[in-house]
Image (cartoon, rainbow, N blue to C red):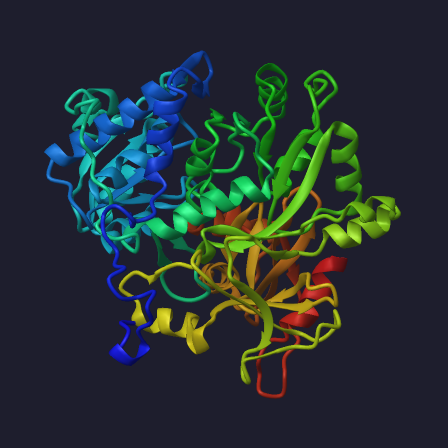
Length: 547
């Protein structure tokens, strides 16, 4: 808001912004600085492939140049369906260097959802790894938009997927110039990326990130993770998820090394950690389970204590103990797509080291306190918009505000207004505030199930079940799972005279949903309801824990 004359002080008069004292914040400069300061340091490792920061920066500029020659400009959308590969890292810089917006599509989604995403984002260019060509060919056939399609052949694993584009990624890069004079964003509020989040009703919502927020969360990661210069980061977290929690940009801040990994497999993870002396990695509980449950023949001694950052459901005590014994220090994070990924950290106190393992697990189960990059975090009564008592018992909605909160939902002003009501971002998660200022989640008001780090809408799964001719009523809740954190559990009432078993319904869901959304447990019973006929999901959650 502009100052009125009466608001001006001597510190405002003739002391204006100009190019010498004000530049828009953008994470794109992190790569430029790393390349100019540490040009020969290894930036990317992918199998036998090695790329320095000089190469990384030049290839990102080639990509930006090639896109610009194809007419891509500020505000255009470039969608990518890529695994954790060097191309995905290059897209995080090359696409926004043109002023365009990067849309990383979840590689696990089905064609119908992907077609919606392409149309809603008005995708102009689509880059597709051949592994995912089948589902994307189907999505393109369903979509109204007709983007330029570019195939990506992973140099370490080309796979046998069909080429569906008009040219291959490396050939496309040859169209660009390695010294392309990319431009800074016109404004740090300009969009840098678009991430779709699973909604509880209707279509997915497009979460818009800006350059300022990406810059701040990326540097916030470095501080939160205590990263020293030249860390070695293993990519077990999908880069399509909240732009890899902004770590594609974070690692350039400290000129670190990205170790790419197409598939999360125990042997590959242990090999990478031992060979490349990995210092940091992030992942859902499934990654921890994969590491701990690996056969002895696949495990290798770790070169040092490895920092492991996890979100989603808090790790059980046994998992935390196992990870510590294996050489990993686990830190619990919390955030949402709308907060650029994690913006809350379970900031550990050294005096807690003296607690029993059970008490330590109780401390680690809490989501924690705000990142330094997040201005405010509260548990509030959504009706009065007043903070709840800090007693660890009074329930409220977790709310945030600050520069690492999204711009809003693309083309959805009503959803944006609802999310920002009262000047706070409403997470939809219910929790408590402990006396020491640490928050802890207790429930999810939107009934989102987080399985292996992926958000699953219970309503979407219920909709699929309701379409089965034998199903009269369906309710889906989270069931705790040692491997995945939690998985969908479906409670079913059949129509009078109809018959179906669990295998029938699971097979039905597999035809209508992405694989990770399919219920792993089916319970046939009368659903508990209120006097008005509303299903009492809190009772079903208790039953699911026992089922």
